[in-house]
Length: 262
Image (tube, rainbow, N blue to C red):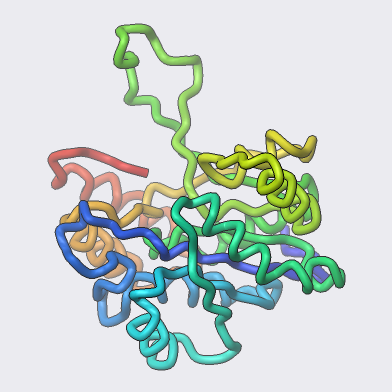
């Protein structure tokens, strides 16, 4: 189902983490991936949608010069709003929402999409899926079934369905902003965007299909895997080649000693 033509979305890219497990001193989102920096892949993918009218990138202050140079070289117009993040994921999201608050209050943004910039292979169709679901239902998160989990650390069997949650996650803009204002007043720090929405709103959050290829760059070998997946998809992140990416992921994850990580 196509997005409503009137839908207007802001995409918040979180890039303020350190990523020390990637084996580099550089912020992992600034590492090279197939001729581009990691964080610019998902910006380009999201902005293929006409519904995406604003982009906010949350960074560390020490990365500003490198980020700005990369934006000039690899992103292009329309402008990306750059804000400095806080000392937690929640705080970084709050900084981005404060930057968007005037536009949200003016009714210029219907949906806010939160995405980890360390997930460079999120396809355009996934951004469309969560935006569409947020417009219709209020919120949306992509999930992947984790059927390979047979027992928890304490030996207990897991619930009937165990899922791993990915980004991008999308929520109606006004309730999201209000939830974070209430969280700020209470001193509440959520583990992710959905947890803050669950605490402060009654907005339903729909689970949509995630993507095995939507990997997060965490370990050094993840860059290798991401480049192989891009090559298998012919460098196309529109989502039209999703089944080919799924097949490639099934094959390539066998090369990694730590298995699949969503």
